[in-house]
Image (cartoon, rainbow, N blue to C red; front, side):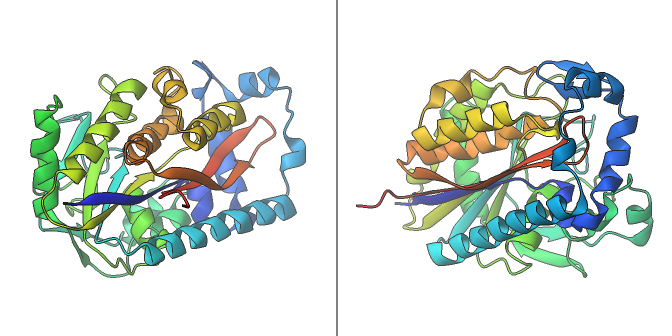
Length: 340
């Protein structure tokens, strides 16, 4: 029978693919944002700056940005080594779609992709030029230079669909991704980050992409439902009849576009302790905007907890980019069998 033998979770925010000298480009977008979400409320940049007393000036400056960027890239390199040394046969990758693939025509809480392959497409120059300031440099690093076909494990994916259905999840299934925002049926950036930035474009095993609607009203799953889904995935994995080693990945988060170190530490500490309660208790009004992607960590971490894997923080870097505290809480975590 199959077994879940490792897991990891990582942020995938644009700052991770942007030279630190250019982090200010995203700050410009923050200053125009009239709906910055923080602890259940939304604020303009000016309101947020007043609320937080412009307290993060010491976190700014190119030298600080360079130091934080180097720590993040080191953590990503450690995740690559973790994957390559794990001897897994399949990676189940959980992330969220920013309406790059699924749109208002159909937004399901959970989608399992069960095609034999999935396309990973480059972005055109027109696509890059149309992006908001500070995004294009990072997004170009999440895609290959040429059209690439990624191998998937359709048999495992179909088994996951059937098994979680039997456990009470009315899962959505996709055997071909929609044409999507870019018209190419390609896998979006949450998965692209894993394949291009973590694995440097060399994906050693088939993947199973799973989509979680973390962002979009009206039906993102609750934290508790996300946790239960992760537990159901682990049960599905261990009932798969082939003797293979499976890894699970959560891509996205932690807090953004306003850094909330308290929220991030609640999540990291709960995983480290193997304590489901603080994760299940997270309210929907906290899991909004980029922080909504914490749901991807909850799904992956719940599966890892069910498999009795032990969590370890590789690094946590609060990557502020304005004195109002906007930016991203960059988290990097692994789960592996406890040392005997």
